[in-house]
Image 1: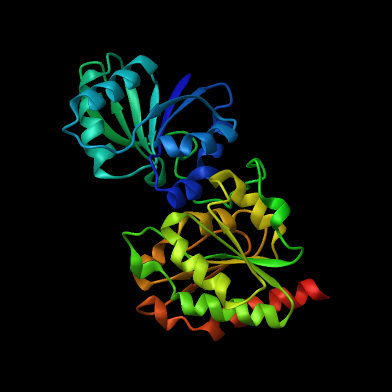
Image 2: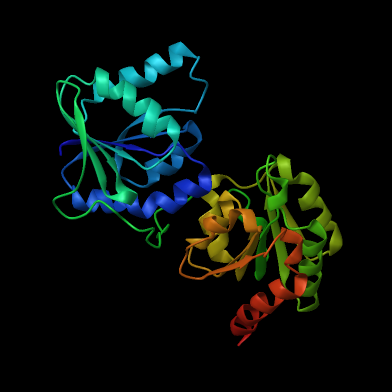
Length: 309
């Protein structure tokens, strides 16, 4: 395979889970030229992976935006790919995109679903058949992802205290059930303050109310509201004692950044638990509010005590 397209449009947490598997492809095909189809917001991160030579932007817009659909398919055809690895695994790519590309591609190619080790072998005459890899299987588990390659500008890091726990109280505004009650984050911050440990609370404008509430709970809480970029997060986590957060992209980044990470989940998103080497996942049997402050503190306290030794 000389030219390979990888499709991974997002979301952020899902993208991070797949980074290790993507890098495995580069190890397997070291001479190949890789192109990534992804959301524009993920391109800066993907560039730091040092794997992709080109990018096709797909912001998952409407299929009725014909000009945008034409651009995407034109760029796929211009890429002249021998293989397309579909890491997105949704109807958008698996059904709609495959159906169009199958008819437009002027040469034979393979459409591969790596997590199932399934290959569609498409011939010049547009016929295709399912099969599995006859070589080393394409199926890859979610390996622990090393984010040591990822660094931001860290513009506001001079504001950080020496010892702190990072708090990530936000998540997608469209999934409020994934947010652990802000009163619980405040309680954790107050317990940390009793041990002379700061809380650093990160978030964007969508989490401003939560960040401000936690910071108001104790003078030892520091706001990093709108002061961190996506690429800053691993360095921020590496400076912390640990991270505590909801099921959101930054928590998945934290899980792969080399420090303990406590992630709190509603039962509805239990399948998306963090998978880092030091991940601690607390999954509610029902709604997220059933995860108590004491349950989180019982996981956090041994980490703090170990750092104090």
